[in-house]
Image 1 (tube, rainbow, N blue to C red):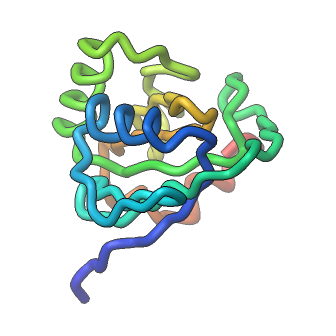
Image 2 (cartoon, rainbow, N blue to C red; image 1 turned 180 degrees about the vertical axis):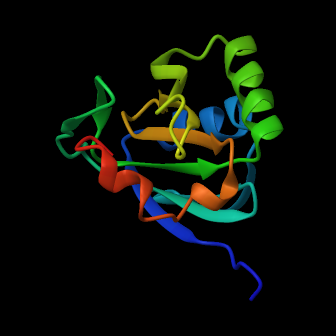
Length: 147
């Protein structure tokens, strides 16, 4: 089965700021753009920023001792791509909400992770697994209450 692109729509309060962030910081290409929305190509996936008057409230959950934004989206990158994204974000002086660090170190589901925030307050996570077989593995997470 060929993996197809996912589609994700998310709110922003300022489309110009969103466009600058997603193109300048993350390197996305712009697709259709209107006064109320803008389509971005995020590593082959279609994400759409929709202009709203105000952002919804956001909550966090404890994961591996960190306050992880409960509502977030992002990418599972290859190990080398994750390190390249980390370097890109650091060179852009993009503040991190969480990370970068290795979550679940020395466990089968070990993963590099980092969270950033766009100008509207949406949280994005970029992660990479040491072993891609763990991406959907159900057994390792049952060993830890914080998985």
